[in-house]
Image (cartoon, rainbow, N blue to C red; front, side, top):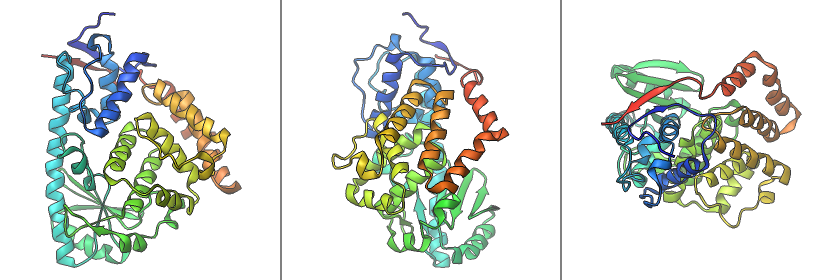
Length: 369
């Protein structure tokens, strides 16, 4: 089927054709492995409007620079958008580096422990620089006892402060720094992740001294909770988790103990199944029964990721399956009720209708060379 290669619309279709869908997931795997894809793909048979829309929506387009580097017949419009994504990521990376230098100065001047969280800790080990992954902010973890001193330091350096529950946000120009004094974003997880215990186990950051970084299993807990907090809305978080695993190689038994001891077995199982979608291999020692997962829940999770993969964004089917997963994950009748009640709210209906309309708006025209 002939396709217009240098002019197309970045519109999210309702479903992807199987060939383009296979290419999409192969690109995600090559992205976190940071390697070129084999040049066996027929560029003219791929739906580039779909692929580039997906790359932008899921915030992984910059990560496709290396995987797609070996395709001589790559459409000019795709090359242009890859270059723009890479330049944007590099510019944001320079801002992040400047911010990290300032945060290091903060830690030295006020003499407190500051833990650097999330992507800046491992992205350079995976990709070598920031061109392949746009980092929009810096996330820090500090003790609640130090938050006033930290706040005074930022305000004294011309940052604007926004106070939120369990965190402070600081902005100056394009710099964005989020200071957390609770590691988890959701209230029900607060009591299961002690900030002081996390900081006691933290290790010196080899790249960003005097900052600290979380011990590997704690780091994985945080990344999984962050992806769960955002309900896996972007494949970016799955790609990042796979990239993290490739460089940290944590002990599977320690990972399993950390999640199960907090009652997060089913939540973790959803993530492990999602990671398999992007080419990650689950440890052989892990079985669903060992994670407290019954066959019925496992089938539900597999149906959910299949629905997510068939559609380009959210879909009514995936939306309904996700709500069933939320209820199944909840422990105790009160938690299950809290997960069910929002399904009868006006907000739920708006989100459901939005899922049904996914892909029918936000049209962008891309023209090459």
